[in-house]
Length: 460
Image 1 (cartoon, rainbow, N blue to C red):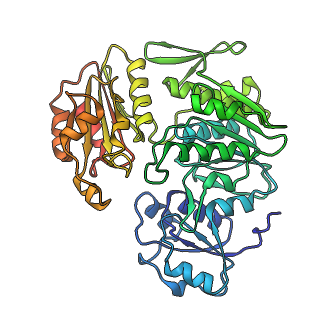
Image 2: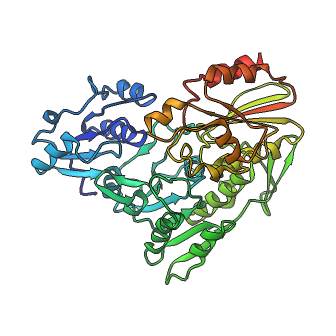
Image 3: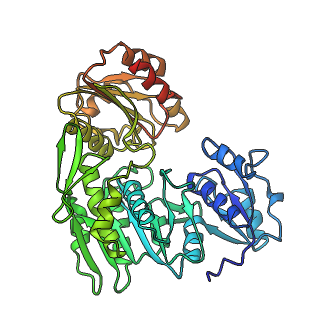
């Protein structure tokens, strides 16, 4: 029994976050009394909270919501250090958790698997969950995207012997600069790759790499580290001698592409067709398989399950298709992700021309000093497009960018650059769509575009 299982009344400061709102829903479903506040709540968080009557009636911070009868407060990263509700909780001596600390408290007596890395961690976590569910295993989880077959992104139960957690390297909360994944204290850790893309949080490459080294060094006796050996930096971290810790490297899963479909080549299960593609996903499958093997899933059980895995939400998600055109959206925003996704699509359909659009939306991607990290990252695209919203630059208080700055940074003279989403749509609709694929990459919304509607219009 975890020591917080007796808690019955919990308040969320910054309830609208992607993990925070899912955790709030899970605790509500477990029968706890849950309240929350936030100064802005976007979709889909707002609708999902409203469905369970957890959506705050008014946005903003209200210290009067923090009452002495609360058992705990869970503090989200979106709040600031001087948050008035946080100040009130401290004044009243109420226990304040970040969500990683709370998840750990709830899973102290479970086997803990943490999946980390700059890219691929959501997909690998999703693959592992899909395989465990297919094989009727009892498990808890925390994942960063919606997955088919799972209602919520967080599951906490008393009886599950295992929890699988997607762990990121960002700061834990406004009052705790520890990377989130350090709080989970994993028995098994997978690191999928290291690509510096958080310029605003880790100003140097060295400080960024250090976080993953700390995670690997924190593993207990009889622990295991699983890592992508094709990543030079990670190979050094993974191969480091650690007494009583098992080190397992993985690589691209053997596969072949036949008529735009990927087939895994296995020694004992024969050829296994899968629904995901790209060498990055073939690595993700290998990493997921290593974890599942450690959790007692047979190869037969793994391959049967993985053949029906459709991918996590917004990860190379097919928005629409015809006989000669496929339209995808992908969460790719960091340079390494933009390159991997674009390359994957070109390799899957080499005869089709590829139109790849990337939105610069994050603090790092819009920073002139960081922009050069995108050099040649769109080289696999036949037509390469970059979109950014000048208002986002203003909002983030960053130096303005010119079209020439972006072309120079991407090292591509024929790069099309748009700052108006309507003009971007007009351009895309003006192209000839036959034997061509469209890829829309962003962690944003391309200035509020309805991408599904755009896909339908292009295919029409």
